Length: 384
Image 1 (cartoon, rainbow, N blue to C red):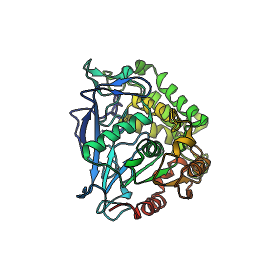
Image 2 (tube, rainbow, N blue to C red; image 1 turned 90 degrees about the horizontal axis):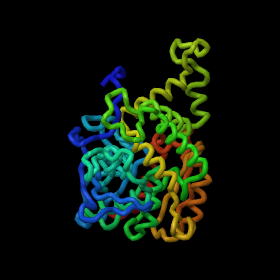
Image 3 (spheres, helix red, strand yellow; image 1 turned 120 degrees about the vertical axis):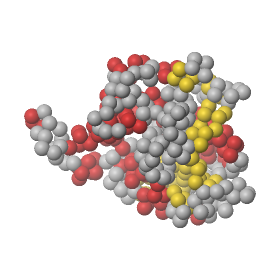
Image 4 (cartoon, helix red, strand yellow; image 1 turned 60 degrees about the horizontal axis):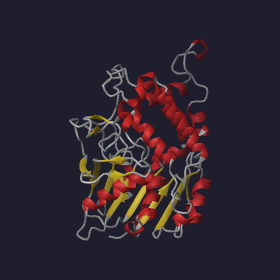
């Protein structure tokens, strides 16, 4: 595919596409999954990838959980079926921070996603058409219920560790609260116990940007021709997100007031940072789905480990495992105060480890040396 190719209506993985390293498991076929917000799913398929070998005692499994636009391809090269290199490739493998000579590593695509797990682009069994606008509201808690069903199918009664950042970190917290006996240790990076007002506001603007694209068609755009899908709204949403994922200092150092090539902004040209945001918007539209972006953004907005549990403090007191909590020094979206609040509320949390980086929230993906050291320390005493 070249940059001149029309952008597809959806970048979702669809049945019949090359599976790559994905494996699949199906749940809730005999009884529906009842969702926290009241909806139901009669058939849930999960795409997941694994690395390493599960030992005889089944005690060496590590669950790695991705963020908003990630997927099950946490490690490995870009290849047929995988539009990009694994998002934590340098951390997962033989001798790496998550050592696959020692651990059996599992990374599932999240419920509501678009890379093989049931989401809005999936076929609704009762209609034979993509769910689209009919896909129900899902929460972080619902996503973890599906991941727990996957653990049962894999024969994993207890994870040696559950690890994740951003939306993945939210699911780590839900795992530790909802299934405390199934988590031996946890690593939570760059998130808090609940979504803040600012996080909700910024996500809601991204959702609005997609929904106001005329080509969004209320969420039912899957039969649109290439170039006729909601990629413009998706690009604006990604641009809003991209600004919040990085820091002001990094933008200033990387772009300043530079122009894009020989373009003149005073003559209708672009500043370099504008080109950067446009590039990332188009790149995402080619590999992701607009409805999934909405569903997952709203799931993050609904994030609240204390909902129905007497508040966050009471919920976090349920956590019985040791939790390593880390944050990024320049993160304006999930600031360090949120990680300090978590550490104060968790019974067995380590002192907050600060990742020094100018990359803002995305530091959990870019500051791999620092993140790797934190994860390695957390896994050092994990069950073998």
